[in-house]
Length: 204
Image (cartoon, rainbow, N blue to C red; front, side, top):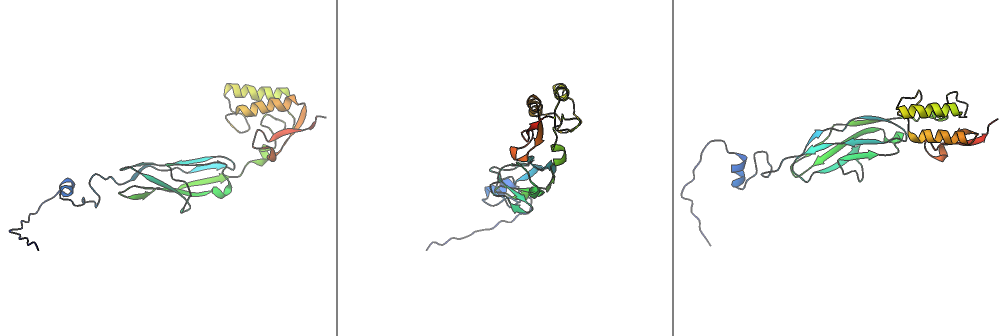
């Protein structure tokens, strides 16, 4: 058996830096290995309001020693597969309304973002019944109506009826409905606007 003797022990008082502690093989004053910067959030996700069928996106910006991992939560519960710095929700429904947070982690710490509230408004079905260019709402588009709508689109001007700015697809659909020489109707089963406006019956 080996025997070891200690001749003297020296004790001194004074501040010891993290680097000096690390050289001794011990943890830093913060309880972390030398060189590890705990994760922190520098940009928080922001609350949003969208309409049913729309899209919402939440992002968080974090700093700290890599690798950084992300986990998004909805009303306090983990969202399966939501492990990126940005969370995107497509075809949003009323059930998606609530509080969203992100947990960012690394070897130094885990930090939770502030809550971002998603508000989901119902789809304005009453206005969807008519194409925005249909000024008199008679389920029929005249040449004058579609030309006025197209002119506003070309100028980048706002139209009295949403959506604004005017989407090109709405303009094209307007001309298509006019060229058919028929009345049109709103059909949700045909898809989202502008595809939801379909030919109905011959004009009287």
